[in-house]
Image 1 (tube, rainbow, N blue to C red):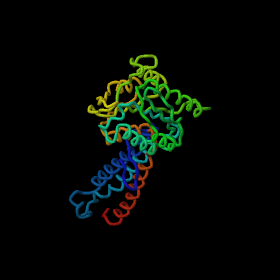
Image 2 (cartoon, one colour):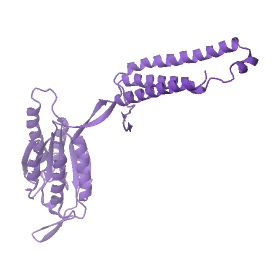
Image 3 (tube, one colour):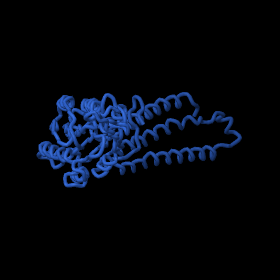
Length: 336
């Protein structure tokens, strides 16, 4: 929960939970205060005749006199919680991550079921993805049909990927496995450089967009097949996020012949599962944009624990200040 002028108030976790033992102090003070009040009442009754008590002290102490003490003790409890180091999860931009964008440019991507064509829509969405990606992320581009082309090696200059996306051309066949292997090799090269002198390599991910299954080689479990490549990505800790793009009504015209090219997401889903990534399905530009946005949230940012004690400190100080003013008002205006 976030309050204006106060900040984040969270109960999600504590960095130093043993500090909560200090809460025994305000609890002990509360017990002492209650005991003093009880003892005070007993003394008053012991040395005063009940019949004359109303004449001697016709006005009883007002219950509001307890409010300053209650506020002060609450402030102490909040200060104790702040000392325990509350934390919350925050998303911060990644600065060393590597992302490889793989775009299918097989002939089926010329289908116009997603206007103007599957490929053109995919290009526009991919350019938007590249432009919105965190500047510190190293982005690369691979296009694939029967042949695989590494168009852009991973670089923080995302304009290179945007420019390369305008030059995609379709061709025959779909070698998805070879494209993944090419991406893995490129990631290995750049992470070797980025992690020089650092035992922890930067995180990496592959984003694969296609409208169907691979057919080169025909068997995805072939040594260079799509499933084999997905398993290799899993072994290297590089998940593959797949986006299956298109509809069941896709058609392309080749040599004056209309050929149905319905989208086939079964293999794409399996690639994501084998690699430890996520699978998305998009049948129009809006859904494609949302798919890229989901990927963007995963690869562009990382979730880390951050201190969240400032908000509790501010609330504690506010209560302590209120307790002071209430105490002054009560002691001045209320009868004793």
